[in-house]
Length: 180
Image (cartoon, rainbow, N blue to C red; front, side, top):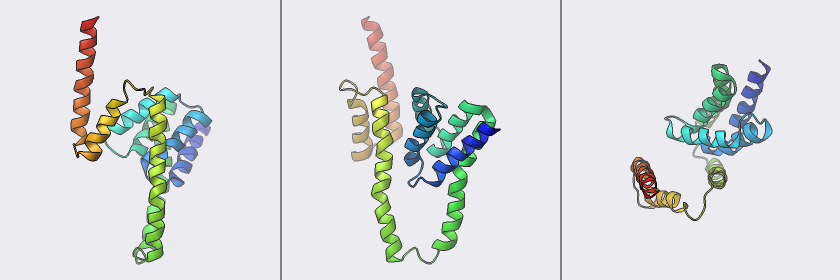
């Protein structure tokens, strides 16, 4: 019971003090569950992030499901998901009750404009850290770079990029095995 409460509190703090959504939560979740609490290892966390990104739904909820399940099963999932989502629910209710009527105020608009660059930085930080952990080097850097160019600049739908990369992986694996 103590561990479940600790898991709930950890994810509640992360959910309460993260601006910018699920991707902005990733470095905080990683620091808490991998570095501080040592509940899971770095590689397990990266696997969970990859699965969370490909599963439907918000990444913060998905990662909390996987972390909670890994640590304490169904009860762990309930603790981490509730901890991660309850702050947002409470904040939305509070903001909605206050925000109606002041959303067009110039100061409020400037506050939100100031928050945007911080959110971008919070999203970029885990991407850079994951790239380092994923053993990115000059030989394989072209794969994520190509994906960024295709999706970000050429407007290709991500599903086509994912399917293309799956096919690329299958073909290159087949070729490597045939060459041996």
